[in-house]
Length: 214
Image 1: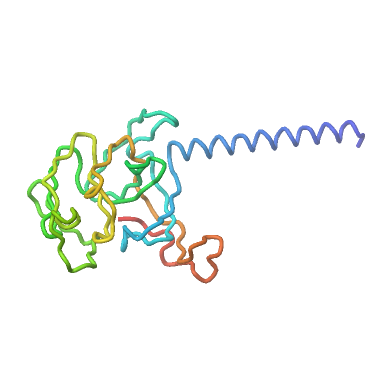
Image 2: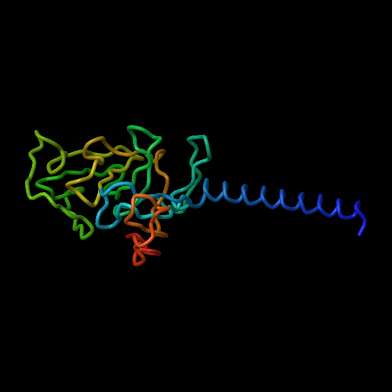
């Protein structure tokens, strides 16, 4: 093989490598922007459904993905429903992502009386929720256990953590606009009890991997 032939083959291989890398980047960016995104649970506000250290995938296509760097949302195949676990940008600081459960949607009226959640006059059955503090706080002290009535404007969601006595949610800072919604939490792809996912030897929660979120 002559030096020129070898040089040309090397250049061809380099071009193919660059083209492949570019396609991988494009596909990854497109998937993250429009289809799926990874998210790590940073707190205990969704215990027992989600544990601190769970890593989950979020379906962005279901409710309709947003065009990057805009407020334009493409059509999805359904709107959020009560009971959906949703990842969204925190209204107080959109740089932060939160995950909570949708309790009510636009047009519905939310009331909380002595820890019982009532939507449009119906007391919700919530097998996913826990309450660890037996004390019931009056509305004058905090909206945790007594709240409302509050009717949501169109296009907004009332979000609450499943760990009801230890969740900073819509009871305290109001509803979430659809513009802030990232997507619907699908399943856990990894889980570790360690603070550092790179130092998780012996701490991986194997039983939670591929757990579908309900």
